[in-house]
Structure formats: structure tokens, C-alpha cells
Image 1 (cartoon, helix red, strand yellow):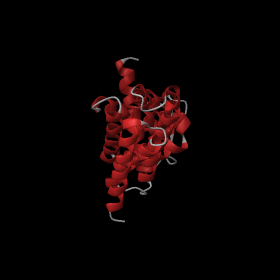
Image 2 (tube, helix red, strand yellow; image 1 turned 30 degrees about the horizontal axis):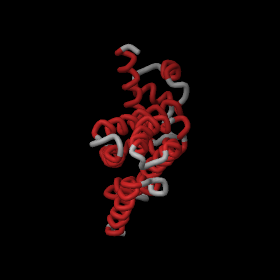
Image 3 (tube, one colour; image 1 turned 90 degrees about the vertical axis):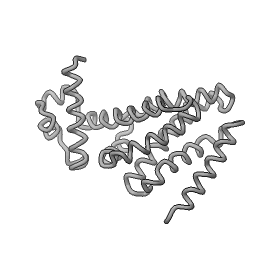
Length: 210
């Protein structure tokens, strides 16, 4: 891909995000996106076969960038990444709440098109592999645990987008969700950490105003 093509695609994704924030998924058309991005509608369809594919790309690239950032910031590739994932995902969600709320329904309704499971397997799967190497998880459980963690992260963001989870509680809900996934399968130090962290999360949520 040339620099010009990369620049054009970045402009398309930026325009798409802006229109989604302003009008919502159902009201946005490929024609409106093409006009906002300054490209021909035919060109837009040549790059992205449908609106679903385009919006899914927006959702995937945004989420993948956040998860990659969490990986790079993590203190270690195991529990450190788990903590960094919750911190970074919640922080970036709250940093651009309008964009996050516009894309949240896409993560749920078009999950297969977005394809986040591949992203979670690349990063979360690697972290769980590290925990399995320490004897804290069974290698045979890694694929399903990775899938469950991905689903729980998407669910937390979707609940937040629907105002079922408050801003201050988002990271805590994410941490608790990961503990709930890991606890039935964790051994040794990971089991102990998951129990302590889950109790801390529950106490934190219980202390928040209703």
C-alpha cells in the first residue's frame, strides 16, 4: 500500500467515525461517508465492499490499537498484561466516549465481521500461554478462556455504552470479569491472585453509590 493509499484510508476511517458519532450507525450511508472523506462512492465500495465491512474495520482497528498499546505498556506478559488491558481499554473508552458509544453496538451486532477474536487470541492468548508455562493454567483451556475474556471485555463496553456501568466502575468491572473467567481454571499463585482481586473488585463496586 502506498503512502497516498494509507492516507486516503485513514481519512475514510476518520470520516466514518465522525459520522457515526453524529448520526448513529443506521443513519449513515456509504454516499455520506464518501462525501465526507472526499472520495468517489465507487472508490469507497472498491476499498470496502459494504458499510458493514467499513464500520467493522473502524471498530477493529480502534480496538486492536488499544490492545496493542496495553501489551506494550504491560509490566510483564502475564498478569501484568491482564491489568494493563483493563486499564488501557477503560481509559481509551472514556477518553473518546462518543466514538466508543457509536462503535459499541457494532462490536456486538457484527462481531463476526469485526473479527476481534483474532486480535484477542494474538494478545490475550499469548498472555495466557505465559501463565500456562508457569503451571497456573492448563494449555488445553487457553483458546476457550481467551474467547471468554474477549466476550467479557466487549460486554463491559456495551453495558457502559448503554449506561449500565458508570465511568468510574468500568475498569473494575473489566478486572472482575477476567477474574470470574480465570478462577475456575486457575491454579497456585494465579488462583490466589484471582480470588484476592475479585474480592477487591466486589468491595470497590459495593462501596460505590447506587
